[in-house]
Image (tube, rainbow, N blue to C red; front, side, top):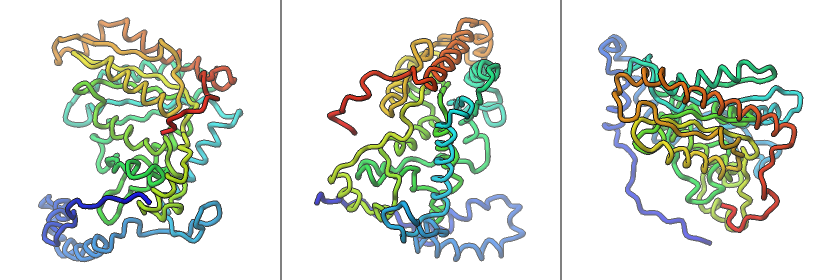
Length: 357
């Protein structure tokens, strides 16, 4: 048996620090009128934290799981059911073609920036192409909502996969964690969006040569789609020793989103657009998705080294990038049609991989 390495310092809070962080949610003086009620919350929350009540509502796993008597989170089971329903729709020949259109920019005129993003405008151009087609449904995933809405999160990936692949559950079981107030995690809604889609289009800016935080958070949390374990009972929840044993016995690394097709549109103003376009394309390809074609993967600069303040004017003037975005959408639509006819098949699918990871 491979040793599970331990040795990092404890992260448990003392009660004083715990209460300070809990009370930070009630910083507004308006809450002073209910101080007694807030005070009564502290021991309840402290007990849940000490007892590590991550999933306070569970039910028996039931048939189909390695341990039918294991108590699974009802929230995790609901997410699993939503994914299964989405996959059934996706695989049905009677269902409309479905596009998941993703806005990867955090900018919103509803919060601090005070202005819409250029990414949003490009998303709207792509959406106009999809909306004009009969038999096509578009689902918009606007990641700017994470910073513009109250208490909507994509919590960080905890990297369970690096302990052992079977410890990374599909869908992710790390959240919500009610004992740690790590709640309102959006991913349980996002996983079914990906599962339901035939085609995925990501439109995003570059932030410091990389994906914006909101997009990168989603990317990291989609690791469970690439080899993740759909049965948490097989690892006794989060038991690293059992997960290591499962992987060492032979793990199939199931690709839960493989076979869908994708388009990537990346824009910047100084540097990094090509780098990010390659990163996103490689990531999606590694998960078994199929690129829609050359015209569906573009990287461009809008207002190259020009004023931030006038960057929307630069987009107004750049009719070429506007049409290239529309063409990326048209190319993705064509790929989806071919995919559903069975004509879009990636070469080499029958070849065994020497490195399945």
